[in-house]
Image (cartoon, rainbow, N blue to C red):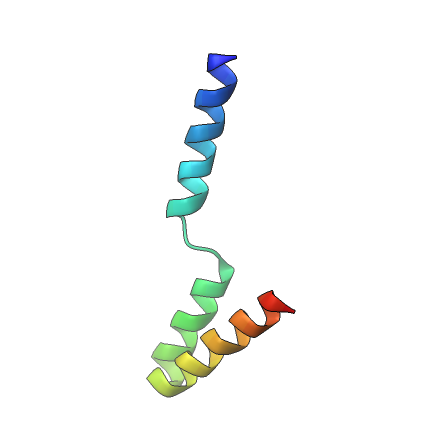
Amino acid sequence: MMHAVLSFAVVAGLLTVVPGLDTAVVLRAAVSRGPRNAFATAVGIGCGTLV
């Protein structure tokens, strides 16, 4: 049982630390189009997640 809990903790920690695809999309928008579009992209991703 302890091995399963430890394995879960390691995987959950890695998933928390590693950025996802949405982070890559926001960074791409920031680099190519500027901070205003990056903010709009982040808001769009957040709205899509809520829906």
